[in-house]
Length: 125
Image (cartoon, rainbow, N blue to C red; front, side, top):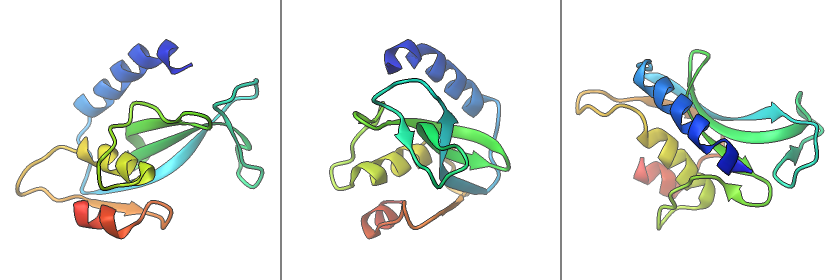
């Protein structure tokens, strides 16, 4: 399913990172993209405002989505580079954070809830 979106997704993601410089405070969270059709890749969360759809892990700054990774219910993460000492979720957070612009004098504060936290990830970041 993702092969149909792969080219468009990478083009939009590259443009979002090229034309915007995030401030020092960014947030890591998950989003749901509404989808009501039949698919093995969607999630159903009855307690959320969007009850059914595609899950996306995002790195955002003041309402701007800087980077994202799609999550499939059956295939887990799409286009994820696994880190050898991290779990799937930790690798996704690390990959999203690695897209931030690097400078020796520039440090980012990444805010996230406890779903994304682990000791191994914090040591790696």
